[in-house]
Length: 313
Picture (spheres, rainbow, N blue to C red):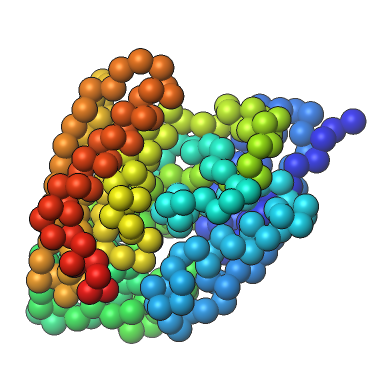
């Protein structure tokens, strides 16, 4: 008799793609499992006319999923790692981080090939203060305007002529088979990704050891180490997902490199810091070293005045 495991997921197309991906991977590795999706409409999906930073941040996307797990209606929840708060609430743990998709930002436009091709004063849409801060640091003449909604909604507003260009995540467009809409993969020197961008995380009830073991084949070591460094940096900076903080780590031949940025929303100031470390020992030790690297970069950003910048938001 097969065991049933239930995944709590938001109803947006991208969230459903992520949940279906985890479902397929679990069933591939564990043929005895029957995986069901529990589709939930979250407050973050319902409030579309206000910036997330004004109504509680991206934690609004996951609270209802946790309530479903608490009530025994679901066994796990699947999230975009960039939406996951830096501290997990009591009773829950982040069990697995899956392999990362393209983590960079995508420039999407029907008329222009890149950010640099936009005319003076062009209207560019984004809901991200991180993207806004970095893009305005590069192009202070642009008119950056608020844009929320799922991927299809945002593309629709672009196609209706409300914006001359918008910025989305490459990962979301690729996963939804919309990579043809990407006119430019924005280079990291212009717009560094959000912490955890492109990675999918799986949250479970704390102490569910059997389920955690079931999820182990979905864990991706390289991604876990990189995202651990990024999240450690963000944690020290006290950064939710709705502040202008960027963090991106690369792991190459055991050398982990992390860059972090904190910006003013109007683009007038952009602080940058980077450091690297050679990882050694077992994975648990390497995660601890990655965390130390994140702390190091965060402390350097704080020494440059990051706290004052973040307090202004």
